[in-house]
Amino acid sequence: MLDAPNRDRVAERREATRLEIVAAAWVIARESGLASLRLRDVAARVGMRAPSLYTHFESKNAIYDAMFAQAWQEYEDAVIALEPELSAHPRTAIKQLARHFYDYATADLARHQLMNVRIIPGFEPTPNAYAPAVRVLERGVENLGRRGVTSRDDFDIWVSLIGGLVNQYHANDPGGTRCAVLLNRAVDMWADALGLPVEPSTPSRKTRR
Amino acid sequence: MLDAPNRDRVAERREATRLEIVAAAWVIARESGLASLRLRDVAARVGMRAPSLYTHFESKNAIYDAMFAQAWQEYEDAVIALEPELSAHPRTAIKQLARHFYDYATADLARHQLMNVRIIPGFEPTPNAYAPAVRVLERGVENLGRRGVTSRDDFDIWVSLIGGLVNQYHANDPGGTRCAVLLNRAVDMWADALGLPVEPSTPSRKTRR
DNA sequence: GTCTATACACCGATAGAC
DNA sequence: GTCTATCGGTGTATAGAC
Image: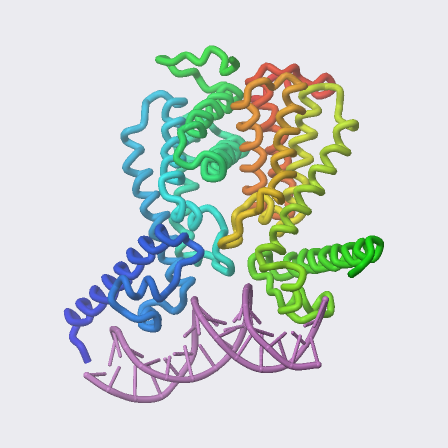
């Protein structure tokens, strides 16, 4: 039987190993593609054999699950860190939030596929892993609500807009900047329709060309 | 050596078998999910064993490829059939085109995943299979161009809008009608920003609520 | 508790008999 | 053209060494 301090040490060590494995999985996923991640490669990168991973995770999907939770948790933290930096102008702040998500989703294909695209056959995130994603969405509703977007429909359209352009980036313009420009224009259209005040510095007059 | 008529008969028979296999693959894909399609099941459905499929297709991905081409070809035909039925009013016609794609993409999850989402690891459609998809896009540019949408940016935003809402339908509201309503509203916002004339019957005044 | 070696089940793909 | 048999590779279960 272990006394309390030793139990803590063991738990810490276990958690550290889990984090090592997840970190290795991210590296391999970015190298070989998220879907063709092989447990043997992940294990080799932490100095183990594939079956040993099952001491720390009950299945391959459990590793995906931990990665999913980590990615969304990291994004939630990033949004929280961004909020104090947001512009005082509603439309500008909403553009910043849109661009922030867009940048996060376009910076890392594997991460985006895991977070937002169902690309792994048979993988469904655990409710626990899904929680930060839900919180981020709620936070988005609040952030836009505080800036005059009261309709949930309009919020969902805003989300769709960003998601659609992220997909178009990865499909047609990976590495390019075109979709980022389109995003700005699209959010302006949407903000115009909602009657949000135009930005002071760059008056959009009418989004029309 | 075969004479010409017999060669045609053989080619016809082979093509018929290929179509049978593809049709069976669609059924299985809808049942078990597109990604977990198993060749054994497809073969069994046409009264064969798995290895025999390799007489007609050189790989599993080649079957996906034929399905991909078939789905986009079928959609191209549907668009061509729709064009004469489109409203004379530009905004209404564009809404019909948007709704038409939305309906096609939401009616069949497996088909949509194959056509629009990269869900099969390692599968990339052949240029030949991709051709009808390219034609449909060009046709879309023309269809909107004829109705006053001259900017390619605005066209791409329109496409993103529809794609984003299709994804949201499958993720959050499968079987529901909410995203279809949002689509109508979103296209109106977009059309307002472009300065397209409002519809005569249902004057949108301002899309704002 | 942690890791290893071995083995199993399942898949797509290939070889060769008929 | 279709079959049976088999290969190579994967995730995973388990027994046992340390």
